[in-house]
Amino acid sequence: MNRVIIDLLQRRCFELVKKRTYLALLVALCVGPQFSTAQLVQQAVGGITVDADGVLSMNSVEDKQRLNGELRRLAKDAAPVDLQQWTDLRAVSLKQIEAKLAECLTSGQPVPEEMRYLAGLQRVQFVLVYPEQGDVVLAGPAEGWRMDALGTAVGLTSSRPVLLLDDLMVALRTRDTTQLEPISCSIDPTPEGIRRLRALTNRQRNIGNAQQTLLRMEEALGRQVVSVTGVPSTSHFARTMVAADFRMKRLAMGFDQAPIDGMPSFLKLLRNGRGNPNMTPRWWLAPNYLPLARGADRLAWELRGQGVKCMTEEDHLDGDGRQAGSSKAGAAAARWAKTFTERFNDLADQDSAFGKLRNAMDLAVVAALIDQERMLDAVGLDLPQLLHEQELVRYFAPQHVSSRATFVKRRGDYLISTSGGVQLLPWEVVTQSEPSTELGAVRNQLSSESAKWYRQ
Figure (cartoon, rainbow, N blue to C red):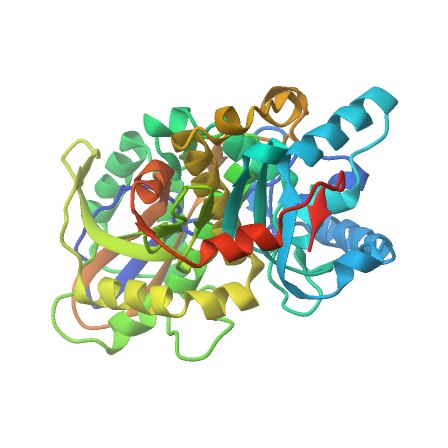
């Protein structure tokens, strides 16, 4: 049973009675790319891949060997010297990035690696507007980068993922549509699969041979359907959402041990808990920002807060196997979500999947802010490369994932199914702001007439 397991992304759950055993049905979402060898380092996230048919699975031994070889090769290509050292504040110019992309297109040269990694920025903390320079600048902490074991570009000393140009372009290109449609990902068991599973479990009087029973349940539920909204399903941005939710579910259901202390799995909380638990937990990852800080002239903005939180509620399925949600949350599921949120910064420092999701959320909020404040119009800045012409890296879009089942023994007679996802409404974040008198100094510090695309 080496297939990855985890129930990802949606509100599809069910509750059934079985003797003396909790059965947790998990569905794994694996993402992977359409890639050349040179791009491999940007393809692996959380040890998961997707084939040309859109079927998700764990990385094979061959995938891991190829990735290790590529990481060794790329380790020789250090970041430029002036970008290697840690700094609390580095800035990148949208105007100069646009100019450099146009230059690369004209000359036929590839986009420099340091631009693909946005000069090593690890978060967008400030958005600064310079009408006199015709520019919008993004700034935050940064340093040089290396590749971690999952193929993610992370800081040399912090190990936090760096921002990607590709994710910035996706965020900018979808900033209008996200007013009408959330950025989200989900995996849905089909109604037919749920009906088959119910028929099976209604016939099953006891657990019997656990492995055989679990396999029959997996076969009955069958493949589940993967969906992404708000961003292209073939984008790195989409893959990032899926990988983070995948990792969250693996932690919740105990398939992976948390990389930090004091964070037991949801199944352990159930095993040690009392009373009747919520047997249909749903977790999802959502934005977690404080109100934005804004300068008096609205030319300087600051993103505040840790960026990501975990939320939970219980789900139900009707007689036809279709979703019927609830705003209630079981005690154990709520406790696990609370712990995840409280420990998110520690988790993100240890697991690049969560840091990458926060980076993507930052960029979506930045893009919504740029649109809300009409910053490009205010400075007279056209960005054809960033907004339209520069080609995005494309990945195989995930379409299906196989079901998997596991169980944990405890008194009572229930079947657990978990679900969840990622949901981001960046326009809701940018509608909340409050004045700040400190941002003017930051804006003045990073003001520059240089043609260089980054500054510090």
